[in-house]
Amino acid sequence: MIQIFQIIEEASRGSKFYNHKKQRQEKIDERIRRMLELKDSFTPEQITRAEAQMDALTAQLEQSRDLSRFIVHVDMDAFYAAVEMRDRPELRDVPMAVGSNSMLSTSNYAARKFGVRAAMPGFIGRKLCPQLVIVPCDFEKYRAASQLVQQVMARYDPDFSMVSLDEGYLDITDRVATEMDGDTGDQTEDEVAQRLVGEMRAEICRLTRLTASAGIAANGMLAKICSDQNKPDGQFFLPRERPAVLDFLRELPVRKVSGIGNVLSQQLAALEVTRCGELLERRGLVRLLFSECTQLSLMRAGLGADPPGVGRDEDSHQKSVSTETTFAATADSAQLSELLGELCQQLSEDLRRKGLRGRTVTLKLKTSSFVVRSRATTLAEPTSTAAALLAATRPALARELSAGEPLRLLGVRASALVAAEGAAGPRQATLTEMTGRAAAPRHECPVCGRTAGSLAELSAHVERCLDGEAGGGGEQNGGPVGGQKRPPAPHSGLPRTKHKRIDSFFTAVKRS
DNA sequence: GCGGATCAC
DNA sequence: TATGGTGATCCGC
Ligand SMILES: Nc1ccn([C@H]2C[C@H](O)[C@@H](COP(=O)(O)OP(=O)(O)OP(=O)(O)O)O2)c(=O)n1
Ligand SMILES: [Mg+2]
Ligand SMILES: [Mg+2]
Image (cartoon, rainbow, N blue to C red; front, side, top):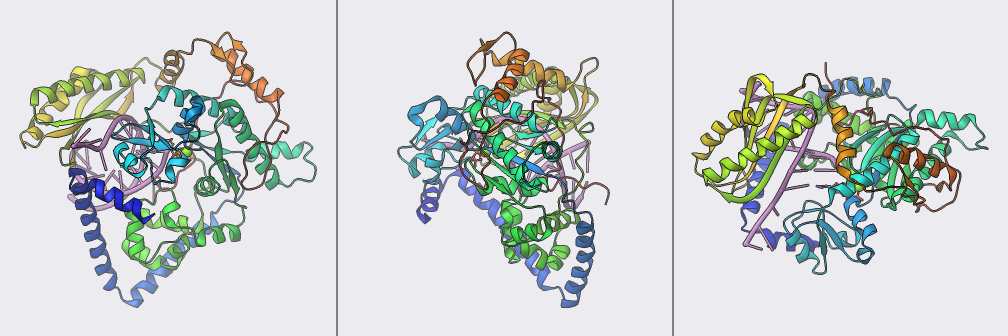
């Protein structure tokens, strides 16, 4: 296992990528050194006082702790890889990954045993695992699979929210309550919630031939951690009780919390904080060394107290649209200029399709040594035309190019977005996108194989089909789906694209 | 508002 | 030989 690190190291050493990564790590180390110096300057009194102040915060978090909801996080297993394995049975039992020789999007579990991971270049994957089969991405297929997953989720919470193609959050509290009103024997609420989630996973599996894992807990932060506990093809229930939550978190690695990434976890490790429980013990240091926003986030992680409220969706809107591309590094200004034109063209199309215009246009570039820079321009009027995007970025490119270093990436982003006049906004664009492009020649039900005349008809049929047949397994924590049970009550209609936003951890806290 | 960093997938 | 693309947020200016 230590060999894995060795092989990766050996394959990378000396490359520009590696050098850049090393430099970045040195900066992080330096930051940590400064942080520790500051820490050593603190008097015990300072720390005690900081702890007391932090206690006020935790008390407030405790007071607003909401344990009344059943939040579910569903995450597909090895998603892209699973889709490819489903469609190509010969890949079923071999280590494989999805992507290219230069970049892998994900790998199946057989390949993970060799250390092959998402965001790893394919050529390194092959060094780790010479038999590795790499298949190219096919986003249309993943989108189609995701649509089916979403159709199932909508039956359990019409206001579900997707984070990406392969995962989403649901609040099934009302669904559980409805179920309890019927005949559930002597099942407790908790048991009903787990059974429903088992049934939902079974439905997903039946409809897509793909497995999903799920976590059930009092809030999204915890549910997300839980969905990982019994992966793949499993689920985990965390009782909605304060002691259970605190026990669960005490020894949990901080890195498992969404929002605590590579850098922050290194900083915390330097403070001898590697488990969520230690966040509480070291709250004085957290108070003295991190920004207010980070303090709040870290205390929430320690307590498992995510904000109770669900952010109203109506306010939520896309903040930026961007497109970028990586190529063989070049300093040829004609070539780069042409590329920039194509990117602006592409961005213009994307903006129009979404019915948006941007007032701020940002040029992004990456030098051949992997240094990333961005140059923004704010216009008098929002735009979506390629010409205006180009006019806003071309001078910046010229300026940056005079530095002489070849570039390996160009990108253009539009932000400060406003809805284009007349159009209905992103809503309509999404529908056009889904129905227009997918080009499914026939609307065939994935469950029974019958065909429908239209997408809407098919959708309605799938609902009936799922209802008419066997439901899922109501197993406790873990275990593959497979049982044959009753389906949940019908909830007719197309899955709404209305997405309730469940506050992801570390999102803006706004006003103090 | 800008630019760099960090994070997630 | 060779290390992605999209979107969001936060910090310190
Ligand atoms: N750096 C990454 C991470 C993920 N993905 C894509 C491919 C994954 O299949 C999909 C979902 O990401 P997950 O983190 O959920 O990973 P998987 O679903 O592949 O595996 P797991 O079973 O761990 O969820 O997103 C990607 O393109 N680039
Ligand atoms: Mg997944
Ligand atoms: Mg995921």
